[in-house]
Length: 121
Image 1 (tube, one colour):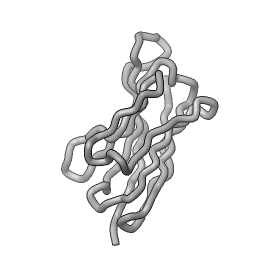
Image 2: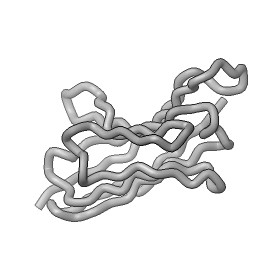
Image 3: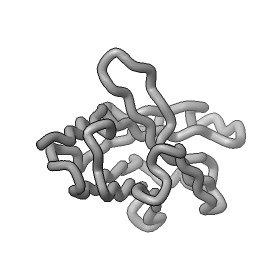
Image 4: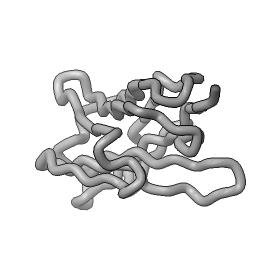
């Protein structure tokens, strides 16, 4: 089992910044693609950003240039730095770990409990 615990959500005014953290219960970054997803009320869960085991990153078009995904291998933690926040960024943000190879001790797909981000004036 792998536990993912998100933190750092909250309420912020448009143009503000937040940094989300996702702490994994153990070192899995060599075997997973780590991602941040978000889900607004009444909408599907969408990909925001990913970081591969090699450190390559990819972003949804809507957040490019504003959000940055990174990780600290020593802390087993992935971050999402969110700048220039807009009201449309309001959602519950979820951390995801997707295994890229089959390892019995790592589930193919793990999710955190989510953290609320609200952007409003």
